[in-house]
Length: 323
Image 1 (cartoon, rainbow, N blue to C red):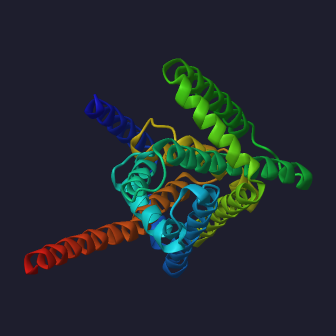
Image 2: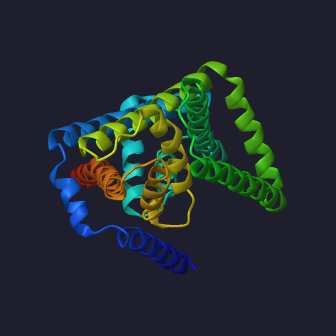
């Protein structure tokens, strides 16, 4: 069954990529890349990597809400950072949007950090905060656009409204199904989730860090777009308005890690406000490549941790044999 899901997602990604690329001559794409500022793109890649540490801080503040139930050594920034980046690596290269959280959950559980339900609640809170910060960023941009008098394109707004309805329907469906199949566990999770909300300081700081993280993502994408020396200029506020929509939609498990969905949305939404398709596709593909490049850091940490564990096992075996 899981292979069927993978095949279906791969087919969706392949179709969407083909659908977008067939509308754009490849020589146009090469021309965009040739005129790009490579120094600016390298700076953007480095900024994208550093920005991920804000997510580490967000996760740490959520874990601090469970401080009384967790060993102190697992609340250190290095431990949380290593687990976060290793999970992100598997999330990227396992070609799934939820694989990263699964690996992070497993790594924390392997270190005997808290109960399963408490850990699951931590990652649920992390996801909710990330989604909430994106929604807030969208509405802030919407308000600022109206205040400054920028025209609001009808197509992206209709898309945003329909996306909101879709996510609302999915959320209600998940709640109903969960209540039917796991009523007792859901009650515990709701209780734990509420306890996180009541810890106002930790929750507020986690939300603030998430908002800053999402805003910097928008800033970096805007800088990447301008480093391509695009044919048309797009105001920054449109990026704040549309990038959160793209990020939210690409989390839907309809394609492999959002591949194809992301490219279609960049070309479709920004194209509706005058962006050139070749510029937008190049931007989307670069952002995808940069995401994978920064994910390699987690892969390096994983290999180092495997080597360290192997060395520890050898040392332990040697000690036993000497006795």
